[in-house]
Image (cartoon, rainbow, N blue to C red):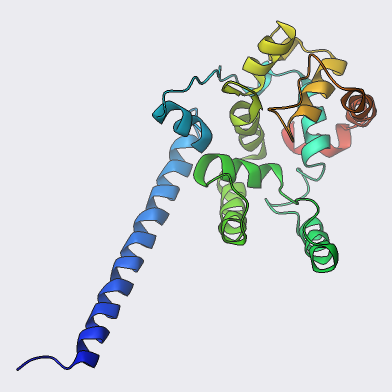
Length: 234
């Protein structure tokens, strides 16, 4: 006896849901495995992977947090996520303020913490969307639970895009811009490196615009007094 059309559709929808659950489960297991692996092994970002696949260069020299200038660490934290040591992966207050601003004037700024940026760099796609943000938030909470703060910051400083032509990470950026290691950056150089992060393709730390130089001077003052904000890194 032939199936009724309604029964055929119901079976098809049921199979589709089962396949979707299996795909979601496989994706979740993959993310958990990568989080566990990259807790110890040097990771690569989705942007690096895309460049490898398309044959474009990737310049990156992974270094431990101990081999990165304290001035750069302080400058990046104060510039990108001053409450890094105070939240569990998501700055809910900043996120709420952004949502309020978006209701009135449209989205004017982001509220991504360093942890959220690590999640985006390692596991997600670069374009902005509500779907990506919805996935990013729970993954950031999970990553902050699984990894210590020092590891999160170390990975961020090693996978962040930091210049044109495939420059990733603090070590490669320091050598490309100042011909020195990330460990030997001065306070001024560290601040210029940090203010380049929001737009690493156009902002060149070694050739700053007047606005970049002004931002770097202000950031240097904040970074010099950042000690109480960095207690989770001790």
